[in-house]
Length: 78
Image (tube, rainbow, N blue to C red; front, side):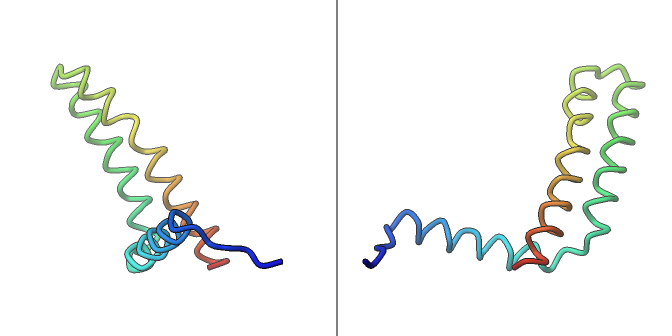
């Protein structure tokens, strides 16, 4: 029995390959320092009285760290 690949699956595979081609060029330290920088920016915004922006930017560090972790885990298997 053969498995047919649907066009949606092919498009998802191409998108994933493009993602890895781009992110393979980004050193893992960039994800870490992006998280640290966003914490600093969030603190600055908080002290500047821009509380809403501070909360918004303050939610970025986990995202940066998860991108780095995901890329490290999946990239090593890739």
